Length: 304
Image 1 (cartoon, helix red, strand yellow):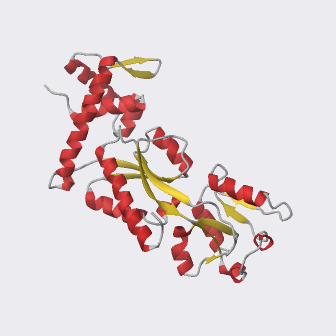
Image 2 (tube, rainbow, N blue to C red):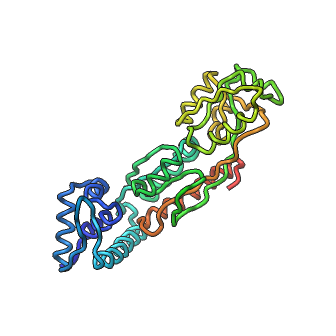
Image 3 (cartoon, rainbow, N blue to C red):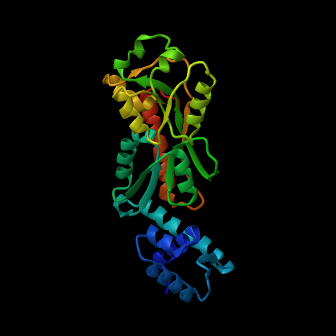
C-alpha cells in the first residue's frame, strides 16, 4: 500500500503552518481528518513523523526527510496535471492577495487569463495594504501577493511587475486644475486625503508637508484608497494616487490632475511567493501576473 496524496498534503501543511487546525482550514476539512491522515501515514511508513506537545507540532528527523519527498511527489503531480491536454484536470485554490492599485488596474484581466489557463481553479481574494499582505504571505495564509515595495521580509520568489508614478487629483469643481503651478497655500485650503499611517507614502507625504511650517496642511489618512477616491470625486479633498488607478476617472471628467510640484516616490510592484514551498501553479500564476501587467503597462506608457 502506498501513501495517498491527501496524506502527503496533510503532512506538508501541518509542517508549514505548525498546526493541525490551520492545516484543516487550508485543506477545507476537519482537524480529526488531518489527524487521521497523519496517523495513517505514520502507520503505513512505520515511523513517527511528528511530536506533539503543549499545542505545538514538531517534525521528527524522519519526518523532515519524508517532508522533502512529499513536496517532490505533489509538485510532480501538479506538473503532470498542468501539462495534460485537459487543463480542466487541474483543481486547486489560489489564495491571492492584492493591493487596491491592482484592483483598479489589471486584476480583472489577470483573473480572466488565470481562469482560461486553469478553468477549475478557485481564487480566494484578499485586498489589503501591502504591509498586511507581506505579513500574511510570511504566515502562509496567502500563496501569492501582488504588492508594492518596500518589504521587511525576504521571499524566495519575487517577479517585478512595474513602476507606477503617482499623481495629485481632485474634483474639477475645486478649480485647482486652472492654477499652474498649484502652490502650497492653494493645496492647504482642502483636506489632503492620503494613505494609511503605517505606509511609506503617508510618511513621505507627512514629511513633505511637515517641512512647510508656515502653511499648515490637514492630512486625512485612510487605509482605503478607494474611499479616498470616492471622497475626492465628491470634492471632499485632494489625493495623490498611482496615475494608473484614475485613468477612467480622469477620462470621464470625474477627476482632474492637480499640477502640484511634488509627489511621493513611484511605487514598485512585485509578484511575491515562497518558491521553495509553494505549489508549482503558484509560480505559473506569478509569471502570468508579469505578462498581464506588462500588457497593461505597455498600453498606458508605464515603465515595466
